[in-house]
Length: 300
Image (tube, rainbow, N blue to C red; front, top):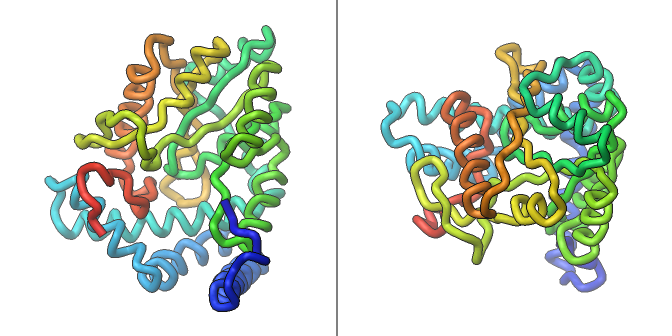
């Protein structure tokens, strides 16, 4: 969670403030451009300036090599840099709330999961939508909000308190309730779920102390909380993806069939398998920077 600025040392406070001012400046510059231009600009800036400067490009390249060792080096280089392009585009799309909501209001949603969610909503049955840092999941959330669904989410607060302040406001502006990770946030999250709501959970980050399940051919500690909640509250568990189209601007919104209720580990492995298949099909759309496989190697 973000630190209280009053508890920070002066150097730490200055460093966080400087980072936030740089981010705000870059975001503000991008937002001054027309939508398509801002998305392309931010993708370029992340892939060629911010990402390499912050060490993200190097780390992404190491992780691509670890998970996809069979690919030629040139392809691994392309995937690492293109994943940063996707991350930059996603960031500015999510700060372009009104524009993204307007665009996604016209978007189709494919896959059996959408009809299953509609039926669940009519009967008051809760739904947990699961995905990863792939494409732009907010594109699907925006398409659902445009159809009248108050899709909530659970988010991880940023360490930088200055950046976290406007980051949270941006997520809240999509229309559905959002809750911070932790006891207070989880309580609100559960209330929304028990009331028959729809909630989004991202499950593709390292989860200390959680089961080691297979992900892209390696053991990866994976949070089983989404499956546990689905079992506890008889909620549908639906994988979904906002897959970036070839033009880099639009999205294919896909909601897969609900995962069968079995055990938390089996259900979570199905989630890993679903996301893994999407990554293998479009590896440049996953965010390769986080240390997903810490149990295998602390690679950078």
